[in-house]
Length: 203
Image (cartoon, rainbow, N blue to C red; front, side):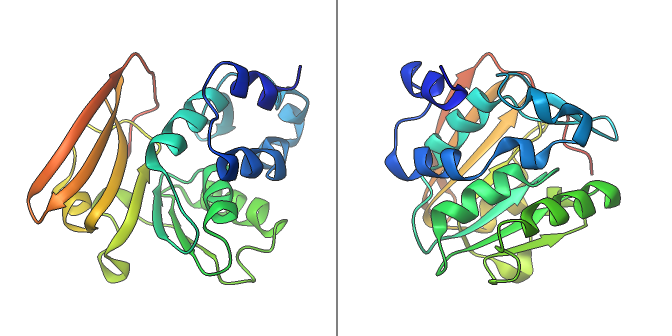
């Protein structure tokens, strides 16, 4: 059974647009060459600089929580090798926009080269920035959705402020994944999903 069929069977992948993105955007394209043969393994894999490409089940879980839609503007913090950014770009489509932020220059470059295979950068859907993602991206705010792929100590005020009313933030804090829904300016509905492991968010 393929990894994607297994993720569907185990309940990690549910939404047609998310499933389609997982089928179209090949994880192997976002791995270092010596690890491409392991792309179908449901485990986090090293991508250099002490960072990892997250476990597919975890990526599926987080993107399903985020509920990205066509035409949305999304911030992807800790974009790494570019896989989550490309998955989100596939879902938001040509009228959407995904900003990937990666602090480590070599990884930002690696991610950019990987994403170029899918023409998302050329088509103006994706922009990769090499900077500190813990502050968000105020000049492009507000965002419909924010995805953080590394574990934070807490939710930064920047993420809260840069989210549109009705927007969603999915972020790992310690060993839990948290979903924050913005109801009003300073009012959030929050839900915790414990039992995960992430590399720390560096700032």
